Picture 1 (cartoon, rainbow, N blue to C red):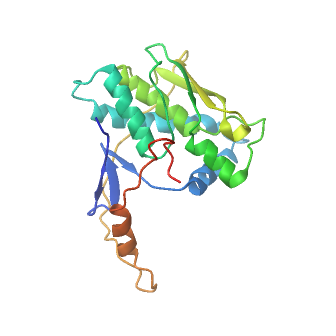
Picture 2: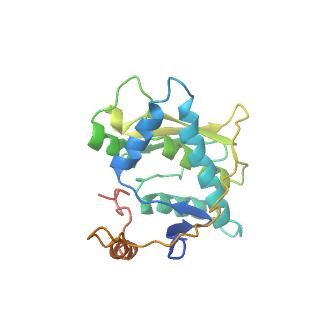
Picture 3: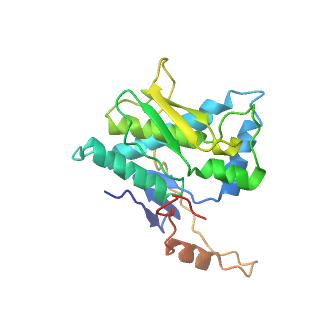
Length: 225
C-alpha cells in the first residue's frame, strides 16, 4: 500500500488523509526548530516538538488504516514508504512490537539537514530529530491499535552530533501525557490565490510546476537532495 496525498487547487493546499502537508527544505525546517528551542529557557519546548508530530501522525494514519484489512507487517511497510516518500529519511520498523523497540538509521532529514545548515550540533543538546520521534510513536500506536499517547520515543544518538546513526527507542509511556487528537484539515480558506501583480514572478506558474514535479525521497536514502 502506498500512502499519498493530492493537491487541492480550490484550497491551495496538499492534503493527505485529512492532514495538510507543506513542502519545505532543511533550511526552513531546522531554522523553525531553532526558533522554538530558543524559548527553552522559558518553556518546556521539547514535548511541543515531539507531541505535535505524534498527534498529527496518529490522526492521519488512523484515516489510512481505518478499514483494518492490512496486517501489521503491511502497515509497517506502508509507513516506512510514506516516511521515505516525504523525504524524512529511512526507517526500518521490522523489529518493533507492542512493547516498542529500537530503530537505527543513517538517513535522517533533520540531522543531516542540521549539519548542512549549522554544522555539528552541541554535545549538551538533545538529538535534533524531534519530528521523527513523534512520527515513530504515533505510527506505532496506529499499527498496533493503541490509543494516542500509549508510546513515547526518545533519541539516544544523533548524526548531527557526530554519531554514525540516529538511534530511537520506543517504549510504553510510563506517565499519562496530555496529547490531543489533531483537528485535521480544519476550516477551509476562502481566499483566491493570485499572482502578485506588482511582481514579474508568475506565482501560479511556479505552483503548477511544483504540483506536477515528481518530488519524493530517494529510494535508497529516503532524502530529497
